[in-house]
Amino acid sequence: MIIKSFFKVTMVTFIGVVALTTGIMLMSSCGGSGRVKILSEADSLKGLKDFYLDYFPIGVAVSPRSLQGEQGEFIKHHFNSLTAENVMKPQLLQPQEGKWNWEEADKIVGFAQANGMKVRGHNLCWHSQTGEWMFKDSLGNQASKELVLARLKEHITQVVTRYKGKIYAWDVLNEAIDNADPANVGYRQTQWYTICGEEFISKAFQWAHEADPDAILFYNEYNTENPAKREKTYEMLKKMLDQGVPIHGVGLQAHWNIGGPRHVGQLHQQGEGEFVIPGTSEDAIRESIDKFASLGLVVQITELDVSIYTSKTDTINTGFTPEREQKQIDFYKMAFDVFREKKDVITGVTFWNLSDRGSWLDSRTPRRGKHYPLLFDENMKPKKAFWEVVKF
Ligand code: GLA
Image 1 (cartoon, rainbow, N blue to C red):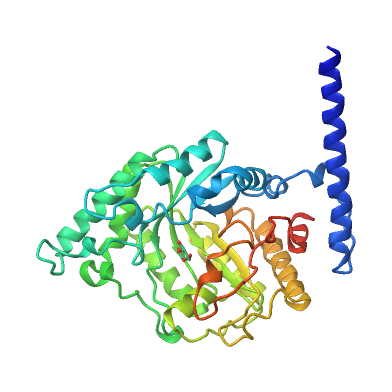
Image 2: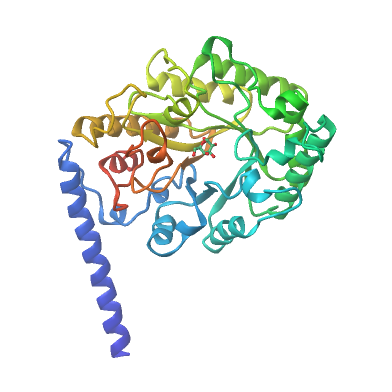
């Protein structure tokens, strides 16, 4: 009895001290931006997701390894939705025909279930990270349309069926619209498209829907803030919807940067030109959300990060300077102001990676080096931008 109440008192004191310390830390950490924010003790104990319970789930892209130890606790504290960063991509799940690797993907789904989190499935059909075997016949020549579609059906059916009732939303199709020339965007000339034509798109959604009629099915794309690409994406979706294809939502990847919503990584990867985004970043984001919502679709922000570098010609590796930090704070605040305003159509916001300790952007060429794109620093502590996003 005495021991029990001693334990209780000690725990209460401990929690109080943690809250107080965090509160004090908040005050001092925000002081640098010239603004002092004092959060209540209760708020200072909350994770990112808790501030958004009345808005939308807050997700994060993870690897199975990150679910352990300190990082696992961090994920549980701040997020209530998970996306597999890689292990559910076609090549990882089915590297050879009929050879399935479920183990890693199962770990993510198991962790989410054990901790009451949602899972977004990512992704069922993409031109990248997909086994070459999908497009080859037994002689190594290009496979026929019938064979390629049959394989796509088998892949989608197996994957969606396995996680039926456990994965609530799927990125069925990733990046089908070309990005090369803003004046002339059309379908990306992938093997899916050149072998199957548009049919692979409608079929992919139909097969996913047949496998799990309750799953919310997304088309996921980047650079939709570019008006030409947005228009083309819109036209494709409208055409499909008019044909009765079961598409329920659009995923805006949102690999942005402090200069506006441009997709630094992909542009670098493909050696493409820079896009000029007319209007402010805020307008571009707003217009994208409104345009897709006007089709009756829900919108999710699926891969959010905000690099501190604005283009491939931006000064390389300056580090996290106070100027870049302030721009990032302002950008994140603006973006979340818009997301909250659009909460009727936005049904999820997912970050791509956990913290500035490691982002996919850091290993990209030609700009190898740290991009500091997330809300948590290298020690997984909230950055100033975090407090701007949760204080509303
Ligand atoms: C795209 C894909 C993601 C991921 C990122 C970069 O946006 O949709 O799965 O591969 O590129 O890591």
